[in-house]
Image 1: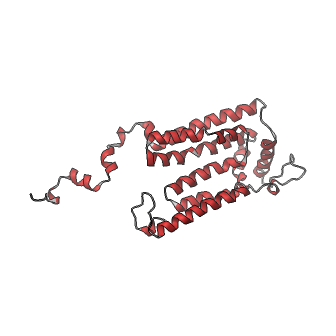
Image 2: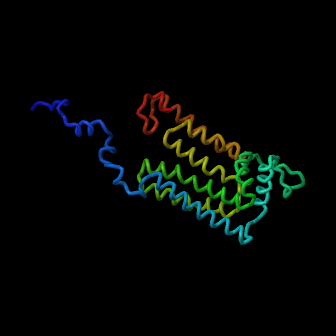
Image 3: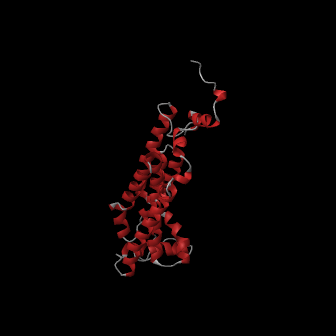
Length: 247
């Protein structure tokens, strides 16, 4: 039986032979429910947890249930940053520079917001926003590799995890800045985007000095993964370009 002539194939058949299987079977984007779209799902979960975190921490502050010591220390430091000074905290002692206690200069990112809204609540809302946005890269990653149901479960499990709940209940701590950095770095590393993972991980050194070990572990993984790619033992997930471009 003679083989069919490729030139005589219909346009629909030609497209089906060249497109990935997922694109052929997925159908038009309009058939995908709104909730199952990755960005909608990710940012919706982030907004829900942001509201929940704010409700917990701000309510405790308004009811005078904050522990006060750490929140007061960081509030004084960020107030000093907001007015162009060093993070001096009288709660720790007269003229005490907080950078002499722990190295966390990334706290300066709160200064512009504190200058507009000079209140400890600004720190609590900022912490809630940073923690909630960490849900986004993990949900997008899970959606890409396992679909909408698993990604929703990942987002809910991460956002409601005990560690994050304890941090929100602990008023304010500088580790809140590490949560989104780690989430974006790990999601990038899991998808084989080595440079992005390294760039997201580097600011961890400015969050607190003890996160250097965490960054070293991340860097070790990236080096090992990069060598595997260079040696041809495996390619970056989803990379169809030449091997040298999959770094």
